[in-house]
Structures are given as structure tokens and as C-alpha cells.
Image (tube, rainbow, N blue to C red; front, side, top):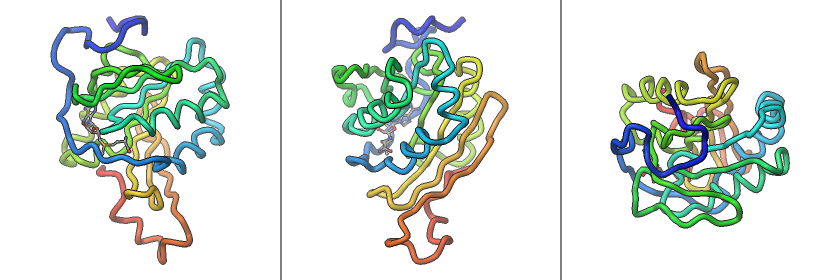
Length: 196
Ligand SMILES: C[S@@+](CC[C@H](N)C(=O)[O-])C[C@H]1O[C@@H](n2cnc3c(N)ncnc32)[C@H](O)[C@@H]1O
């Protein structure tokens, strides 16, 4: 049985977090396109507004927690009382909480939490393609009822982005977002498509 979202930092079975440590590359405002979409898209905003005790988990926030803090501030324009937790598999990257956001060690098992919304950006991109389906399955099994997952990738400055929205049953949509000033052809996004 999963926890009631009260404690983080340890998975329920007491085992190591699931997954592997990868490069921690991140950057200020890098995930802005996905964040804007999340706070304007009807499916995500409805879910955020209607779910009691909503919890958002940013899985794999990287070498610094800046994108998690930005995400929390943007999501709270839709749901001011939203609980936000950043999980990182690398214990050296876990930082003290700030701005009402918690940080803890965790992997695909989600540290025993049952989030309403999971974001994993530029995480599965660094895994082999064969690892994606089992990771999605594991994350979907950890969702709260009606919950959603955003699995995405982008370039260093967030000018080329792509993300998949999943629910408990599987992938629902693929979104491509890019800067028209920095991308000549839509096919230039191909190198940033999600692994699966
Ligand atoms: C490239 S960084 C992405 C940082 C941030 N999400 C972004 O897009 O700017 C990927 C991070 O995911 C972490 N990571 C990889 N697998 C993970 C897993 N299974 N659970 C939690 N974190 C994971 C890595 O340790 C790394 O710090």
C-alpha cells in the first residue's frame, strides 16, 4: 500500500530509489514552454483545480532545483495550495526545502508518494529506449486516481521542446513547442523528441 503523502525521502519498501543517476544538466527558465502549457491546458488545469489535496512531483530536477521552484510558482497560479515535491535519485543533489517546496531522494517508485501530477523532464531521455515503457508503467502505477504524467525533453535553453502527457491508461497526447526565431523547420525538433 502506498503512503498517504505525508513523508518523503525513503521508498516504502526501504530499498534504494529505482533508476540510475544521470547528468544533472538544467537551467533557469528552461522548461517555461511546458510550464505555460500546463497552466493553460484544460486537461491539466481541471485536474489541478478539482483534485483534493493535490500533489505535484518533479522527478529528476537535476544539479540545482531551479526548474522545480519555477514550476511550483506557475502551478500555484492555478492551485495556490498545491503541495510540490522535487525528487532526485542522486543524494548529493537533494537540497533543503524552500519557497514552500520540499526536496527529497526518490526514483520511479516516487518515494512512496501518490502524486496528482508527475513531471519528468529530460530524465528518460538519458535511458535506453527499452527502459521507457517499464518506467512509464511504474510511474502510472504510482499516480493518484485521475492523475497525469508529463514526460518531456528539450534543448539546453528550452527553445525546442517535446512532451508526452500520460494518464493511468497510457499516452494521451504529444506536444511540440519551439521558438520560431531559432528553428528553421519543424523537423529540427526531431533530435529532441522523447525517447519512446
Ligand atoms: C538532465 S537532468 C534534468 C533536470 C531538469 N528536470 C531539467 O529538465 O532541466 C536529469 C536528472 O534526473 C535524475 N534522474 C535520473 N533518473 C532518475 C530517476 N529514476 N528518479 C529520479 N531522478 C532521476 C538525474 O540524476 C539527473 O539529475
